[in-house]
Length: 547
Ligand code: ADP
Picture (spheres, rainbow, N blue to C red):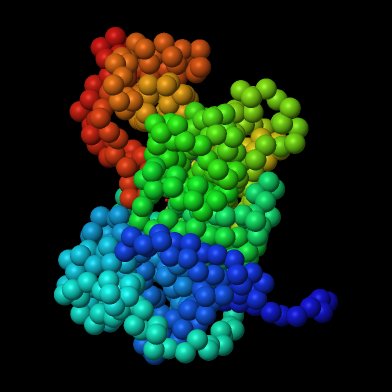
């Protein structure tokens, strides 16, 4: 027997309609690509999204068409999110920091019809235009006054297009499984792979994030998504923020410590979401200037492991709760969030920290399992670790037009292989031990490179650390620790090893410590172990001779 409830589709346009009706005066503040500070309300955003929907219709954009954005986090990007998806087209956000050949590949693979771009990225698109045969036009996200001279063909000015259009538009309704947005993951090998979200998955993900215990987002929150809208929809902030009427503060192109600190304090930001690299910059600036945060209550740290030292600094020195999240582009992206269980709150601070550095418990709608090398399930006992697989309604069931990648991405039961190695404890607390590619296989046992890195950055004179496995005739592989020292530090190998002794199992002790000026990072700010391994391919461990 079917229930007798209305069959109303979950639509992205419902979010902006709801925000306009329910929180019309709530603010959206943006630092723009032109360097201005812009502020308006949800009412304005909804009105301009409707104007933009009319623009898209006038350009003959239809259901299913891919429309690219190459843009910072600003109100115009926000409008494009709603206008494209709202008419059934697909908002294809592109990471401008990708290598140029991958960038062109993505636009051609997706067959984008139009590209929306911030003024900052005009030179990049000019350089590539010859390779982008399918693009019919470029829309520069600015007004007439800031419109640059450009060699781009069929170029339009965003504000000029908008001003000619009516703000009357009825958002169409269609099947909630319709594709809404597209994001390519920058895999470490091969071409990037497209993850195609739907209206349904986007709304379910937003509901799940909002239902996370302890997140407590509401009309009194002011959220700063430092995490880019050009990558996995800024972790969903532009969707779940309006659902609860939160003020949104978009940082535009300025992501350095000083600019972020100013925006956070001037705009009364209460929650800020971003990757560890961004918070390193912010904390460095706060330390140097001795400033304090005025209203900031919580930072969400995700995208790579949150170092314990960073969590401690936020909480101890600034009274800001630091919460770790784990996820992937393929998961919309949030999978787990690390809030303390009520029973953990009475633990001493160092025991609490041991829990906070873990990745956390699953969002509603995310199922997790860990398996051994033969695909057999491992117990959730907090001890056994193996490859982590996930499933859920906001998790991809196949990359966009990429049958090759899809053959290895799922197991026989259709679970998605994350490529992460993890433990899960009896309370459902997940802890990433490593990437399947990065774990160090020493004498038949696995050493977690991430655990070692987290311990190393606990040293006050270590700014950043990376651990890679180096071939060893007796053990197969042994860990090499590569360190970036804080400025002015003379820390040496012995100093590092002495610090680690007692903090890690003795057989995990790195066989060598090497100091470098900087570590390679990807376009999304992640440590690039592939590059690092390449850099150290001729390196020989001093312990090899002892064999
Ligand atoms: P994104 O770029 O959106 O973070 P990717 O799909 O490029 O997503 O990368 C996802 C991977 O990033 C995860 O599989 C995991 O290895 C790593 N990652 C994300 N968050 C964390 C975290 N909190 N701790 C450790 N690793 C993380």
